[in-house]
Image 1 (cartoon, rainbow, N blue to C red):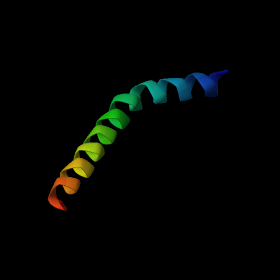
Image 2: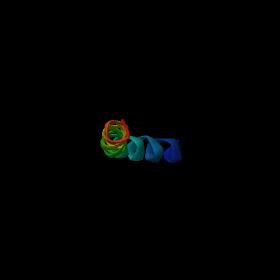
Image 3: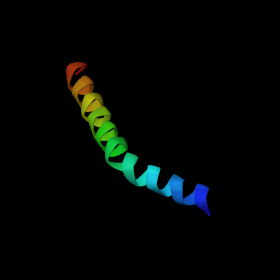
Image 4: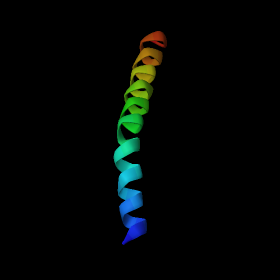
Amino acid sequence: SYLADLLRKLTVLHLPVIVTIFSMHHRLLCYFKTLHK
């Protein structure tokens, strides 16, 4: 279907962005943990 194909394309395009944001968020959490020790 057209909508499913569009959704798949959007997911493929947004996956690197989501991964980047997630890794940055994880790094920030680790950074804050070291600050609070």
